[in-house]
Each structure stands twice: as C-alpha cells, then as structure tokens.
Length: 159
Image 1 (cartoon, one colour):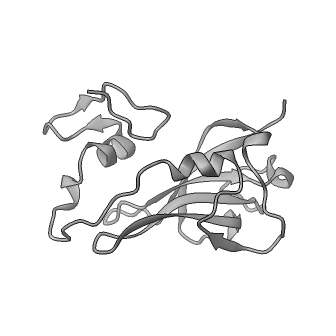
Image 2 (tube, one colour):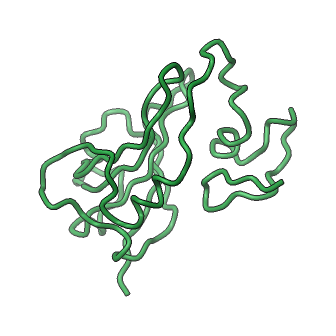
Image 3 (tube, one colour):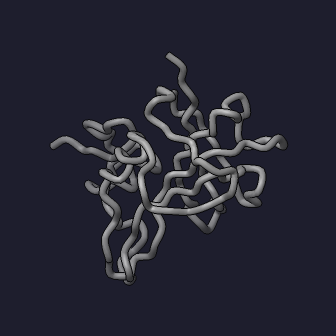
C-alpha cells in the first residue's frame, strides 16, 4: 500500500512571535520533494485560522506551494499516511476551503479549535495544550513536567 509524507510546518516564527503551526501533505506528484526546498513542493495545508476575539476555524489550503512562503521556517517530517486517506484537489489552482475531501481532512475537523478568549489574557496562560504542542511539556502546573499522554500531537491530555 502506498503512502505519502506528512510534515509539520512552522511559519513566521521569530524571537518576538510564536509562529503558526500547520500540517502539510504533498500532492501525489510531489511526494519526492521535501519542504522547504528551492524545488516546488505542492500540497494541502491543514491549519486553524482566526483570532482570540472572534474565535478560530479549520482551513484547508489546496495546491499550496511551500516555495511561495517567504516566512516558512521549520519543517519536520511527522510520519506517513496511506494514500487512500488523503484526496488531492481536482484542479491545479490554489484554493482555500473548509470542506473535508478525504478521511484525513475529516479527522482534522474533529480536533477542537480554540474558542473566543479574553485578549487581555497573557499569551503564556493559554493552557497545557499549546504548551504541549509547542514544547512538549505541561506548563499549567507552573513547572516543566512531562505530559502524561499526547495522542499523535493532538494535545489529548489524559488525567
């Protein structure tokens, strides 16, 4: 059974900004390319967009080319997924939408997005999920305690 790589992309991270995290799955014609690269690597970005005042929602960027991102920083290979779980777009044009095309997209829609929040809340006070995702530790107790359970990077913390 054939598979394709799944990457974590970190975009826009600086010493004063946390950056934006997203999942990237190359289109079938680009599975041999590794982002970031000078060679085009076109695929689907799965991420969450929005703001603390209005809330957040899932978004899919179809036919996203990693070469076009001027602020793409870190990339990490997370693993591989069966080809049958991901559906490539039917066109070659870049587009954004909120509709799942395959089982992988549908699974992503089941991950809860952050809700509205008080914008006056300190950034470091966002809770253990963001701390776990960013650094692999639970900061909710004020320490550097390892998390008891993280399910495939989706911040599912067992109690």
